[in-house]
Image (cartoon, rainbow, N blue to C red; front, side):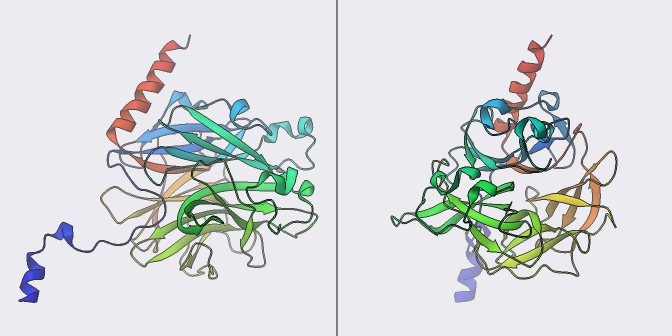
Length: 358
């Protein structure tokens, strides 16, 4: 009788895989939010119906004023976009960095930078930001009296490639639960030997950030992490670039966002590019499928290649690499599934602006 009763339950009422992390919504298309690889670089949008063939919005121009959004160096890189956890809007984080202004800014090295930008939007078109200059030290953080990872923040020289994941288990000092975990690599030449992965938490307003904590240290430099919850195996998966050693993009897993993160898997990784260099990984699932798409930039070639490969429901068995199509200058970025209303709104916005151009 029990078996018959279970068989009578509609499939939609059966237990569904637990989904954690960022809110996934939209079955009409995809937004590719990325650094446009021209000159100083800026943040651009492209739209797609199938996740592989895209077209640029605004002809690939910047979607906002970098001078207004990036208050340290006036340029944004490595854009990562997601929905607010309650679906009320959108979030973005960028590396605040302008490689063409090295001399003007008095940077020691071309690839040095000092902070990140936190952005919010209600419609994907109008954005506002908060810029965090890490050289200013613990006073910029929501918990300035907490123990710091550095003795001297003024010597920090890299704050790279921030990304966002909703952490429902994080508890604030006042007992409030839930926050946006922002993870990124940092390097302070005066106090550490190489880039390491750190994380902070942002509040609901996405304007306040906790002091960084070390996420892991495998004994060598790591950058450009991308973390996703994989419902098929009930683990957090992090794809990441290891600086040095075997080329490729590797995966580590953990039961919780703060770890412990295991060592990267050495026998199942993105190795299609041979000895060429690749980084800037970003993964998303295709609408209505268990298939994962893994995006990354192969930057050894000229011109560079932005690649999309496939993986199974466990984010394993990487295969079938191909170039993204329709984007003029694709680079490090991220992907967001979108609704028809969102797709049409952004397309109308782009068309209206282009029509006004001389």
